[in-house]
Image (cartoon, rainbow, N blue to C red; front, side, top):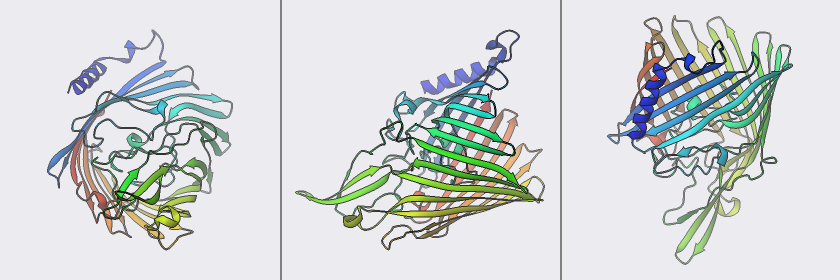
Length: 445
């Protein structure tokens, strides 16, 4: 409560202040802003409040010249109920220089972004802690794999908030109508996964090994890459425009952000024991994206080939419970703006395993669809939308109706539901008891 009170006092001080307080006389180099957000969630099935979140994101920008600027974004986060990350998070997946500063079980501070952006001839450099967005699919990610994700709220959090910024060298070179981007990422940070007991802890057999009844489990610490140079991630993207099409060609050599759960079965005096030894594995990603507008219809998509996708199997003794396969994936999206102030968007996600085995847990081919409808009212101050994600293989899904209203240019409130359905085996169905009512407010300064 003291932390929350301090955040509100800081927000009030920001609201009362002006940029002139931080700008040198006659200068317009400094720009200071902040976003204050609070959101609460009530668990419908479990009949309890499971989230009361408050955060403040102050941002400072200093312009050295027209081409060079420095940006710093911090975050103070407080949670009222401690259900999303019970206790103090271990942050084992996060590099030591990227971790949050924990102020107890429910409050932390974080340096979200800190980078210098400048122009050198035809090259634009962004150096420091930042987000790099490649893919733009709704609800699920395919090409957007540069930054790992905090799965504290599964995929329910806004992507900008759930991405974990990384220390990155980002260079973009202008080539006429094309643009060539190079990335070097020495930051060894990976997906932040909820621990056992958290509201959205993973339990589906698609992502978590399942021990036979009566067999003990010995979960070892995650084996992390150690060398800042040889274990870095590198990538490049060529973006261009061709006959009305926006095209990109992408390559990313990286450690996949989900750990691989290698397993071994042994006998002890007390009985059988499954030892789980998670570690991160390398992968080559080849992909691209495309988009074009045809009147009221926009066609867009992404295609990805992963050389090394590690999958859980039912055969522990011979394979360690894991098999490796190449994977082809794509998403095709159709966005229709034919009705005034409205959007209807359909997406088809599919992936195929190129080297499947008979004992893998997931299907060789996996299909997910999404349908988004959105409409604006009252001169675009009121927005109503519904997003429906459904996995065809498991028959599970997620429905997210939401209404938001802009009280002022810098103040927005919203009300919505997150409704899961399906069996516990599916990615969505595993959270069938986590349906919730969500309400929140955001204020910008």
